[in-house]
Length: 314
Image 1: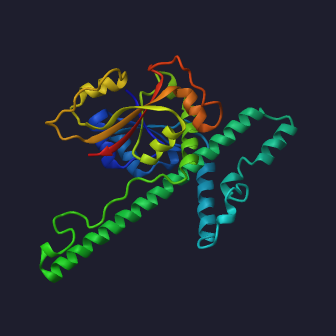
Image 2 (image 1 turned 180 degrees about the vertical axis):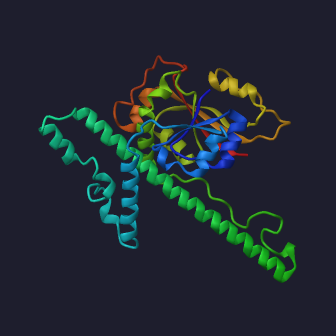
Image 3 (image 1 turned 180 degrees about the horizontal axis):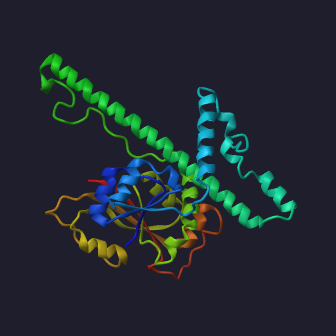
């Protein structure tokens, strides 16, 4: 069973470890080898994740575009940017494959218009995913810094007051609760990831992946709001000994195996099957490059059915 983590292009180490123990290595699609973080590279070296790069060869261009965008963002920091919504052309990373350039090539009789458009769409999608990952990395680092500050503050108060029981978090629990994962620019990122997935031709030479995994409830709701779905599991405990469940996930028919009550679960899995959908049509629909809404009323569960799971650490 091949499990893809989406629409993120990075995964937290503790979640990757839990997934590896419960379901095996997780596949991560990534837009650019040159932009892989040390943390993700370490997970790949430990074989907890498998990195797949659907497109390579333009690293300098995309890295320069990311740098240009950061400079642009710093220059406009604190300004009202609401008027820029929908204005792609002035933003630096849209310039490399602008529509005017493609039109000029068509008029000059050079290249294949459809192929140029496909490459331009894919490059923009990859850049969006790179910028989103960069944003979330910075957000995660900020959260870690705040958590460390909170721990230092607790320690200082304990030393000053000498009364551990009277202090918040004295029992070893944080006085704040970590928020659930949030997907910024959800629709755009799902569409961009789907374009990346469609470009991963080597990934689809074997059987399509059995399972698409997310840790964000918003993603699950977004997709099931658009497509009829059948719930197969609801927060089902999955541990490193869930061999029966792993085999069942490859072809989910009938009730799932009973959970192992004696083993502490690593994750809890909510699983839905999109009704009457197959993988490639679903991805094309998400990417907006073809009809993804048609369903076949006679199609039942098959190896090509879309299985979508939401995971949460137990």
